[in-house]
Length: 354
Image (cartoon, rainbow, N blue to C red):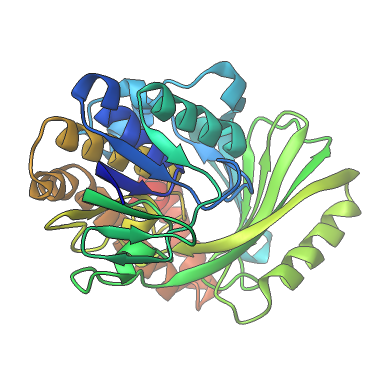
């Protein structure tokens, strides 16, 4: 049985960033990345929008590592200059916010390459089927890790293997496509009306490409609703779908416990997603950095718990409150429009990130 100091299950933004900052080549800490997919980043799994570091600092003022968000130009598709909200009764608001559209496959592959360059060993197309204590079992191999890290998404095998962790709550199904076409607007678009209970439809322009999708409580089949929206969009502009994707997003908030004894959770596995908008890539990278720094310094995992509670939990908790208020008012168009008017007058930060 091969032994490692750290076994990280999941080579998405959270897992790869954690491995990068453990920096096995310099720290001498052996790290194994296990990834179920054949290639990091494929299939694509999100809406592909990411804030600038300056915006991260506004929401998480105690997070202090700009290099986490220093990405190569090849990863970035376009700059975001505003969000157009389309609301019930045809009402529209324009939020003056900025960010970046990125290529999720390229981001994951870049972060994975950074982890490997830093000295992490890896296995692709290798799913962790069972974890017992310090042992990780795959279909063909067994490994032993002093520390076990769950960066394996909303249906985390690591989390489910240890009763100390709660399951992710409010898993909202989503579906999306990547399409080529006349998608050159500088802003992104979000539709929020009664067709999408508990969620929204999005059209994110990416310099001649678009990520088009929706997430909603499954009162109807999510893929069917998306197909209806795509049919409507096809009457307005020409485009060609080249990729279809989907999954679930955990919108129940950050888990109370993200570290226990020799095990830690990070990214979607820990519920590091903004409940108010479903964004999680930035927090996955932040969480990976916090975890990697703690492990590299030889500190106990309870220090990771403390840092997450101090740096990330306040904003994520506020975002959960915002989501509950949004859910409550969306049952009544007049109340919801009044709430969105307040956000428009007072600033969109609390809607977008709590």
